Length: 319
Image 1 (cartoon, rainbow, N blue to C red):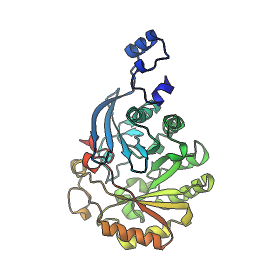
Image 2 (tube, helix red, strand yellow):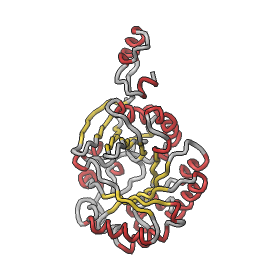
Image 3 (cartoon, helix red, strand yellow):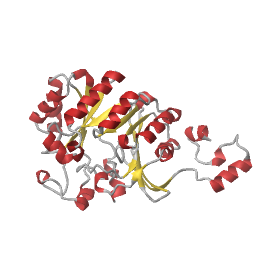
Image 4 (cartoon, one colour):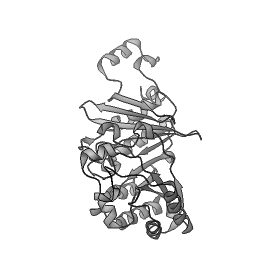
C-alpha cells in the first residue's frame, strides 16, 4: 500500500495487485489520508497551496513550488499553528494546536505527489520542526521513496538548540536552515521572541557544531523587512557574526506580506508604519547582498513564489 501511495496512487482502487475485496474493505474502513483538503489555490507562477484539516479539526498547510530548472519543491508543516509567535509570521498569530504525526506530515507530501513528481522538500511551513523532531525525522526517512533525496531535504529552525544538537548526533543527513532575520539580539528578540531563550550567538555555535559533524553549510535565512533589518550596517553586522565563511550560505528572502493576519493578532512594531511589515525594495536587497558578498559570504536572493495566493506559511489558515 505504501509503495502505491509513494508512486502517486490516489485511491485504493488503483492498487491493482491487492485483492478486490481487500480494496473495498480498506475504502470502507480506513481513510486514504489522515488529512482532509479544505481549500486549494494555484498561483500564476505554478505554485500550489493546500489547506487541510486533521481528524480533530486542526488546520495544516503545505505548498508545492515549481521552478524552471525542474525543481518541484514542497514546503511542509510540522505543527498545527506554532507556539513561538514570531511577529512577522501569520502562523505566529494563530493559536498553537499540536504537533503533527508522521502520517500527517507525509500526507501533505502525498497530496501533491498525486498531481506531480516532487524532488525537494523543506520543513518551513507551519510550526517549528525541531520541537517535533521524532515525527519530522520519521517523515524524512520516507521522503526518498516519493522521489525526494535526503540531500534535497532541509529542516528550517528559528534556533531551537536542543533540536540542532540532536540533528548533529542522529537522523538522516538532511540540510539545516537557520532563520536569523536580525544580527543583534535586541531586534531579533523583538521579531523572534525565541531569541530570549536561545540567543543568536549560542544558536550559531550549535550550528557550527552541526557543520563540523555533517560537513555541509548552514543555510542562513534572512527575511528582508523594509526599514527594520535591511540597512547596510545591519548587513555588515550579520557578516561579522557568520564565521568561518565556508560554514554559511545566506538566503535573502523578500517578505511576503501577511498584513491581514497580523492586524487581527497584535499591533505591528511602530517602525513598520502600517498594519504589518513591508518588504524591502529591490535596491535595498541588492545593497544588502553586496555587503555580504564583499565580505566573502555566499548570498542569494530567493525567487518569490505564490504571492498572489497567500503562499506564506499560515496565511490560508489565519483567514
